[in-house]
Length: 260
Length: 336
Image (cartoon, rainbow over all chains, first blue to last red):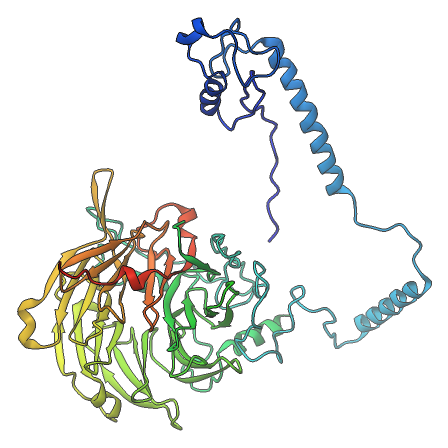
């Protein structure tokens, strides 16, 4: 679940010719320009120069409203300046991103030996009919099966903003993305692709709002309808659940082990 | 985001219930993401301890101490948790999702209700925890316990409301009939209930923006009333929102209501007045609970899948907040 890379388009933001400030949108620049000049047209007569402006730009000979009326040569100059700034910044960013994180120092003999040993072991394991998974599954998560922490138990105090555990792809309930930092609203839960047989998607019939009443359905509660959504649907690991002990997670997790 | 509330790390999906420990130092959050999350209320806020279930959790409550809790949800199993060891024990199961559960410290029993239209009484210390199963006329939604009058209120689909005598219910080893079989004062599906602190009655909220105040004593039938709440005019349409959460303040005996409109109000049922309307939250109010000492109100805000929130970014929003001004906010105004 990588983050989507955002392509940044190069946009010239509205700016104020008088003081060379940039603004998020056109409206702001109109207002702000007036604040800089502190002068509607009517007061032209009793003020000879503007305040808060750059040197040489304090006259009334140019009439500017919003981004209209700014001298053309000034616009061109501004544009080239901004392009140069953005260009260098983008190039620096691209260079930083593409540079592989490698050190070009001489690899010590011992490291080479260790790597060779590891490789030999791996090759031997491959020829061995009984393969043993040598890598912890799912990144750095500790093995969840068959032995592991007590069923359904997660270690206390996961670091803030980091998922307590990466969601298991075969987990009976799809886990959403982790809760963010306190105060940061969490991103909406995303669906984890199912590696097992996909559940046939049956749309849950929910009555739309009627005459302003958000939930006109008088036969079922919102929670009951919500529970029918495929993502929340739960099938008991055993038909009657009699033999099941613990949290009921075990059965599902074993299925994941079989899958490996 | 509203000001003045303490923000705790929220779960990944909607909040189904909130409950404080008896000593008011811990908060247990149950969520549709299949977890219960234990918050230690210390400053600065710490991330919660998370205990996962194989399916969405609809309800959780503390036992007699803050290290023991019970939970239930869509996997139909009644679970007992020991937070010191992280151990979980399945007491037994219902035939459908468990909608609500309540611990009775005076009797050391747990009572659960389910969408399978039954109520079950459990004794966790016994070899076979299940003590009795009581049939109900419809799918049960909520439980509320009034310790002062030892009454248990059960709200169900089709507007059924049962009142049980807790002492009899806890002791019964067979089926017993409820002490009262009532019909909700509201015309629509009951969404939430809360019993008064003095044990005299209860407030109930429907999916159709209305709150009723009723009394246990049949002689008080005349004094029951209902009023409209959690409605707002959006583009000329009078929108009516479900009332998802009700909670009585343990000291002042006034109650808070939370709706899918994202608003929380404090009401005085004696004065028949609204005392406070907090600023609107960006998403629906899913759960409310006061701390037993009356100093804090825990607020769970998340989309209830009831059409009330339309913007996808607000549907994905989940918040757990603590408001610590409620001791003052809920104090009934004395007549001058």
